[in-house]
Image (cartoon, rainbow over all chains, first blue to last red; front, side, top):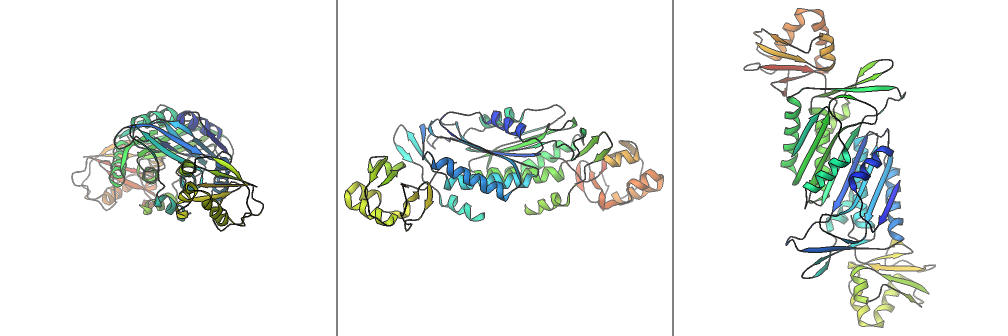
Length: 147
Length: 147
Length: 82
Length: 82
């Protein structure tokens, strides 16, 4: 299990390859990466991600351990950035390794659903005009009911 | 849409990064990679993947177009190797890009479920002792019913 | 003595990221009432509790939760990571 | 004249990857019966049709499908890609 909360950028492709090499014998690797989207108007200057140091790592570890308990996983990776990001920067990624594709897919979706609503990150979009906290979506909270 | 059926190896991480760069504005990227697993005895000399040239590309294109019709996808990538592979080599990967993680996840799972049972590839495991065609699994056929 | 922390727009409305609070509040809800009584910026920040989440010692909890033994209480809007 | 193709263990049992077949068979099932009548290796390869799949002109189909207009018929076990 590898959990990283960091201000610095990361290379999703290099991380996927390193994760795959480490999980030899797994057979099925699923990754999700979240990328900063520009605003509809195309005027995003930056996205600022605030987090709650200490609780963040704790919450992600709890979610990842829960995933490992539910599915037969060879390994789990979670990387999440905080601080200032630009449009098209990777915000975060998760990766799961398992013998079976169904387990790898389900565990990755589970991780994402819980990270969205249970890990203490908050996004703010800064444009030339204003600075707006991204609002949580009801369907993100609803997504947890599936599990 | 990028579909490649090839004998040569590929770099899943580099493909993921190239796919992500191309799909700017998508926000959510899901990838699946399938890796050659060694046998339980650890004596896999090679895996040979046979395919049906022509039909393979046709079947994968049909599956990818179906995915694009069902989900709002910015892009779809499918790479599948044939020929001789060794343990821990990547066999194939799919990647999906969408504005929303649910669509990206579902489309990737859909692609995998149909590739497994509808794209004309056959795997043979060659060990020191024998050469065995991998048998299809009932649950792979059952997985299609979900869609 | 409890360390009280604020994040995102809660931090912005209250104007500080954290403060040490002397309190006899038995629950989070009682602590919120004490804070609201202090100044308008607190009153505004806590005016709609359904828009807020709370963690005690870095675990998400409810506003009805007991503060017994609590060292750190954090208030913030629903998370938007991922 | 139909091009008949065999893949995986079907190819191995029959011993060739493809052949051109002169036939009046109206359906895939009739073609299979003609092939089985030829030689034992065909008879063995086609002994359990539930273990086989068939494609006409590179589209998966059923053994009951008509061969009208077909140029290429392929027989193979269930796919195991991915």
